[in-house]
Image (cartoon, rainbow, N blue to C red; front, side, top):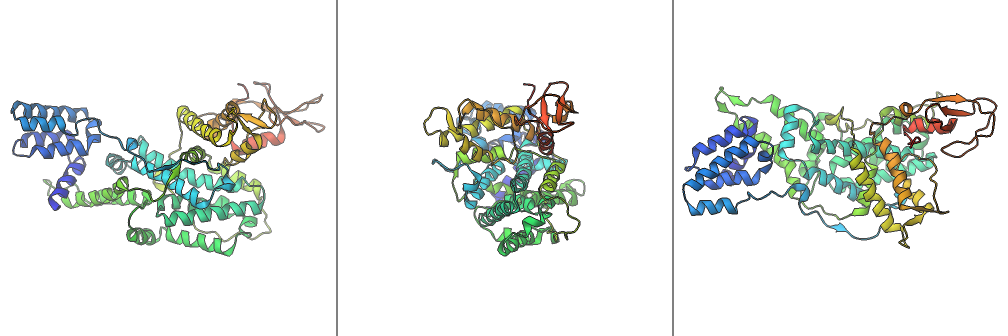
Length: 506
């Protein structure tokens, strides 16, 4: 009913024009003519408002005391039996069904549909953790800083885009890169059918990134239908006419659908800046509040949806850790040029204008804390052992491990193991913790950690990373004056490309 919607809008949107404490004080002065159920509804529906404002909680405490002082048994029971009990957080709410079956954790074995569904599941969970207060904070401040829920959305969007680029660039031949590119096109098509436009934007942005589009040898091997599909995706997500193509398609969708968050946040900012809070200095601009309320409600509608797919926890753990990686633009371009160097004789590929990915989160460098990284590594190692430790002796095949490790677009040193052809849980954990601590940019820097200088060795010497022999007449390798470690030239170059700091001094 319209009256109920108006009350809900007032309770949700009041803080745009008046502090919540002042709003609660006004409710206090209106009691008892104001029905107690309205006040209780305020507390039940928007507990987050009370959690961030201790003064508001105190004001509501005064109201409860007033109600009890009236001696009305019915009202007292209403208070005791209302949702004043601890509120169920979105992150604690029942999750969509999760598949309990063994799966392959190897990238080449994953079906595009399966990958799209699991990325959509992670996206859905992120959206469910964003409250209306988070949206208000972004609109008022114009930044996602100190807004963990929206920061996570930015990190996932950027993480997916980078992961797509790096998985393509991690392949050695143009044919292999074209195959990975094609696979991600099929992932994008499935995301479109799932109506997950936010992750679709991230995947398409990665495929259109100039570090990928410049790879002429790779693009020449793409089938025509793949090139056509990419063109269709970029047309759908084009920012032309204020994303008119996307808006038309999105508005036609029903049921489960994930919006492009950046586009809708931009709408909220435009509304907030274009319309005044008050009319004639005294009257609240209800039209502005109504428009803001309608837009935010559309974003919050996803909280009550059930995704039309299931997810497997082991694949979720793998993808979560994969998306924790972070590289700078320079590092990605360096890798791109290492795969296909510049050739002045070759005409450049006609560029495909990429969609604007997460521009609303620009300037935010994701930095996951060590505890979070450790948690994600542990979850993934548990999943690996569950699916591949067939003898349940704490070891898996080294060959299978190397295939799983290929899901991560970085290269670590040769992993030493205490069993030939096998690797233990502890060794797998050490392997990923060592690399993730750097790829997730936890503050370490390879060049800062070591002081390497070109060195000529007068006796047979081996690299501390690859165990290879340092050969040549002069300056065969690099020596760190601090840690006394020795590296081959090619190994040091590779480490610089991936910006990986090795815990050599450990």
